[in-house]
Length: 306
Figure 1 (cartoon, one colour):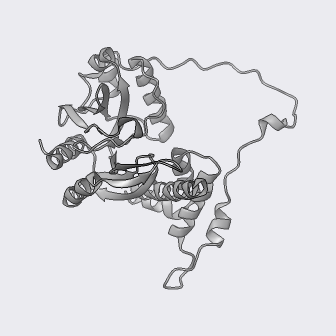
Figure 2 (cartoon, one colour; figure 1 turned 120 degrees about the vertical axis):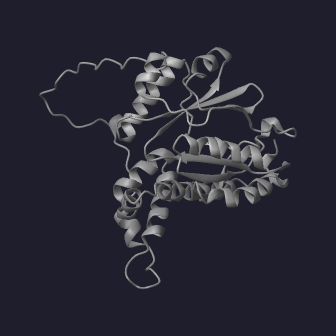
Figure 3 (cartoon, one colour; figure 1 turned 180 degrees about the horizontal axis):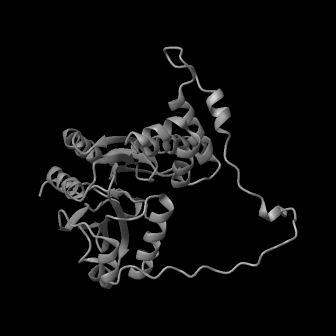
């Protein structure tokens, strides 16, 4: 299977279980985000061949003040679907892989011995917290505690550019694909892939008020109002450019050490434009804005180290 065919096969498998769009990002060998864009499942195949070919081109990359290496770019996709949740299970051992095999719609290797499985689930309660709780219960049942899983994966047919693999970078390879396999929470539970919910811990009510100590200081977010007030005016003069305000707010939040996932969730709360785009079925706007801000933060950080 050629690189392009393997990449398309992965996209087709994701769309068969309900993915209707993808956020595509490129990262360098240091895993810094260089670029990101949202595509519908219908339009992405047109851009896929040049993306795969360009990602494979070796360029000289600086990995320290004194060392460079020849490497291409990592091509990463994040699936999005309106009526389905995607559970990503990474770094699975052989026994864990056997347990999830009956439920997974795709299993692939990002490097020799590093297996990743994806499960599509319908019928989950709406909301990010409900998804995170269900994901936690599945991971606990499977016996994996990979909290770094980002719900995005390297594209099949492309190389995994990490320093530890140089110069023989492995190719992401599909091991199994089961198009159309969508599970329900009940089916996963029957397979033993959902751990029981943790009991609610009783709390002691405090009837005295006290001021928080210095160790209990609440982390702060940047002011979205200030980001909006400082944004340039739109070309038609109708008001501030909310896209630029969203980008700058994400940039500041990431500099303040908030994670990309936290920034995405908060942006949907503070930005009217972000809420509107999600309401209109374009959740990729939020993710792409955060990723582009993360790329700028990473690039400026690298410049500061050189």
